[in-house]
Length: 515
Image (cartoon, rainbow, N blue to C red; front, side, top):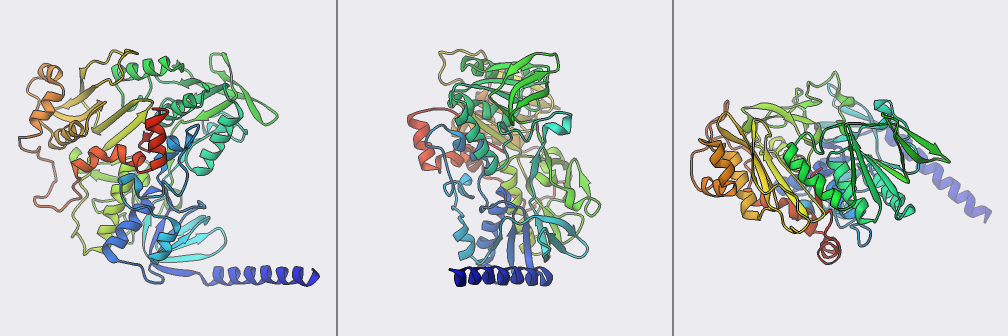
């Protein structure tokens, strides 16, 4: 036994010595993807499809997580279901786009080094190096920054309680596991959801599915304030209310009372006290740009890139949540999008640009796309919610209606700038996407309201595209397939067979969200 213990100690010492030597020596790669989220997986698949298997020292992915890249939207849907919930490896990238399933073995088979559970503590853009928390220096020729965003904590707004056992955020699998434990610990209990945006609304639906009573608290006048109009929001709030959810609007949680490491009460600014068996916080996110502040040009909270996703340093690309890029549809205005569709498409475009001769891929031509599915509802939005909102369909909530269909167009300067549709078919979603892409002319707003989908179905078959300022003729941009867009919202869930079966047979709730 003593000999065995001595051998174990010796093995551990040799391993530490090897790690120390490796840290001092460092490693070099031609391409490094920094970040292990959705964008990293799609970038890796694009690399293999364009270049083939990576050779030794050619490509690595550095991720703080313990698992290979996965589809984050699954966390707020399938993962939180009360039974038959999705689990890895079922939702690794790139199943969300109805594509290959990239498990850790896939990366190994294709020569891509995965540096998991590795935190980069500093970056030297000029020197083209990254320093990890273990002291290892990673050098690169080309860097793709896919660091995503981090959740905003209560403490950043003067609140408290983030470390409590039953206070949950949702950004990664560790967060999702904590949320599942919290739900299982309080069946039939009271949950306070702080925030009325994507995370708040989708997690609320998951909580209801787990038979937990839900109160949503947020300071805005209606849910999904950045996207929904008042009329659209009223429909969803009425629907949630019919499921037992309570909305408390135009106020905020000022503090949380904690006993024995758990929150027991949420105290509102107006002094009201709400009993809480668990708390879910969804108050926004902030792009992870800290490593590059002062080294790369920043814009609108992200790293500023051009249409090739190339940053102000010629060796660095940025993609996904962290990238602020020019949108042709908006006349070249720079925007940053925190959504899974953007992560997928910008990652692919950056890899194409990095591997091809300068300018050969053209500038990205992105159609902003957002979607969600909660309970038996499903909506999609394309474009920009700028200008006058023109509603169509029946927005009045009725518990008897199992398949509502309604929407809105945003008309800006006489043209369709954006479109929202609840309950559409693939063909209808394709039609509204095409109408937004074209910037269809609207001669009569009242007629548009009367016609609704009939307008897009007609206009989608004819008409010239809207000219975009600064667009070069014949540019080979990253032009989307509208059929792909139309099916994307379904694909991320239905490719997870067990989840899709559970959804179809037992509980029509919460299957889809764009991150």
